[in-house]
Image (tube, rainbow, N blue to C red; front, side, top):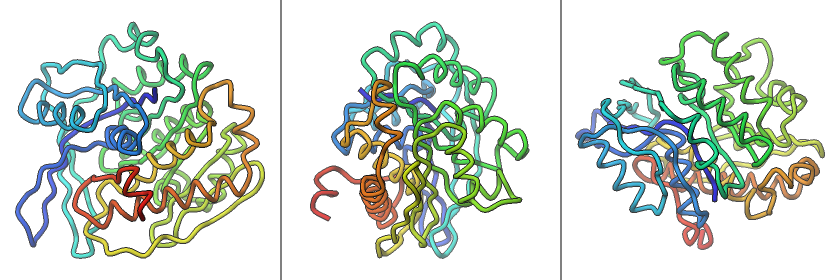
Length: 306
């Protein structure tokens, strides 16, 4: 079982050329769905309200065979409004509630049978829930592989220094990290994204990957560095592209049987051929996602046929 902890919300997608579309979203939730579509048993630990949008999230998780052990609560379901520019890029506004009361008391049962824990995004930055997420990741570290995507949202967490301090709390616990070049440039404006990734590798990670849009992803491990080109595709919008990349990165890690804390030493010996395969697979998943509307990650069959 793969466990994902973090926020879920409704993406209200607005553009000048179409009416508003509502998609179930939230970076960690998208990763959980992406993993399930790639054939990996997954559960999502997050919050949503007892409202119409919350029921939409439950249906979405159920339809994608993702387990959701945390019940709805009385707060409104979170909403992100994505406004698309003419090129399909998204700028976000958020109405958020992020807290998971009782999470620490449930951590043992929530992680039972899991070999990997993924987290990131708003869930690791926004109080009061971020402290509970850190507590769960800390408790999980001796038992599971930990993957992390900071997926920074400067419109929500405006203080880059605070965001950097929060990110680094998770970086030292993570085995595999994915960050966009924009994330790293915002967190560390005085050095290149690649230099920041190397620093995170030195902090203890086995693999750090930097996504760079049309330039394609770049990754570093103890064996060295590698980059792969971005697949050619027609862009409808970029919603969920990074999450599809992250899900495929985690999925390829599991396919290589690197998941589980007992495989941590082997993961740190990953070679450049394996890392290249992981980057290519993940880039292909992201390309499929940007070719269609919303956060709609590919299935394993689609990836096999591509």
